Image 1 (cartoon, one colour):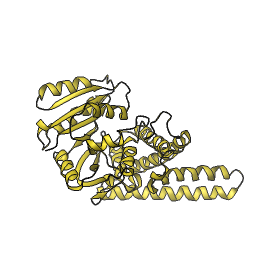
Image 2: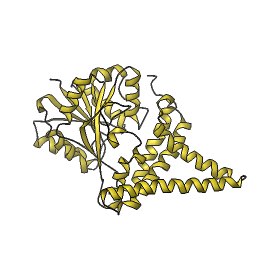
Image 3: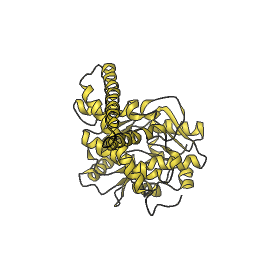
Image 4: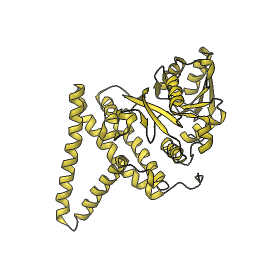
Length: 335
């Protein structure tokens, strides 16, 4: 039986870290063959104390707290990998909750497929109380918000571009060189791109399941998608071939809005085209929000899903261009 190291980047996650550790403790996998390494970005909200208290109450689960003074995710993951002893590295987040059979199913799928990385489907849950938090979670799994990403919208088992919370044979991480610390976000996608370029498969199995807490407010959602879009743009400065149609649509939409608005100064018909585009887009988003509200029989979702989708598109699309113009981060290794 392979041994497993679960690695967790963490910073100020007191509200969720105990739930993650409880889910790991409850895994249908021998605790004697598993360890948990939490790379903490010097949390000051009681997270470190919560981890220590949980470890003291549950000595059967090996938990190690690793300092990550750099306070960003790729550095946390690499620090944890460097100290991990498992044959398989499973990456989880402090605000995720894996199903009881998560580790066992990851190992079975790795054995069955010989893939370089396997992962499964997110169930996105609200990050807080209220209709808006519910709506943000719904928007995150709607095709207008997630595109064709199978881990968000479900789908059949098979090769994909990336998966969340992947399980990697250690040999593959050593082969491709771990996470690129110059990328503060989008590090999973970039690593999986290198894995696929090196001939490995990234495999999606919908039977591998976990839950993920969405953002609680539109401001938090906006910040998240600005970060996602910016670092996606920076990554594409080096890997332009990795761009997919679903990722291109928001930047192109933002560019068309700006182009038509600018052109309208000299060409009055451009203003009419801008109006038509805005009306068509608003109808598309509102229609998706209405469909979700009807399907879930929760019409309080309608304004929130509409607002969340617009926030995601505009923030991701605008930040993408800023990241692309900045280019590939200086000092990033030539992998």
